[in-house]
Length: 182
Image 1: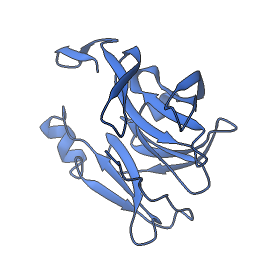
Image 2: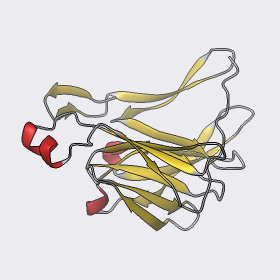
Image 3: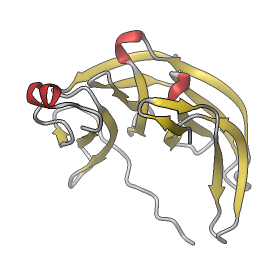
């Protein structure tokens, strides 16, 4: 991940993406990463979705479930200015991606096949950091947020910053997590 040289100034391209295998071996896939964030797989496990936040892009790779190899990197969605910085993400049972937009105060739903934004859920805080589905049947979305770097005035306008939000009524469900068998 990019190293902070001084507050809000980063030394770019210092990170790498690694994969941890069940036998606890580690493989480096690539470097020159700024801030690794969202990671998820398509429902058929043939596509790996990835966010390097400062690229302002959601990328896809072909993925081989048996070997863990990735390739054919491509951008499937470039964030618009008001969406700001892509952070954490998750996938729903329809194969659509949900991306938290840091400094954008929202979570967006994307169609990875068409590259179109399908839905926007705005939140009462700017710094949305990640999202996941939970609850008894995975029909509730939980969104985390940050308050780092916010001064007193900013926090007074957004007193819920740093909190976790539950969103219901989206009409879609998430997929259960996959346990790591190490």
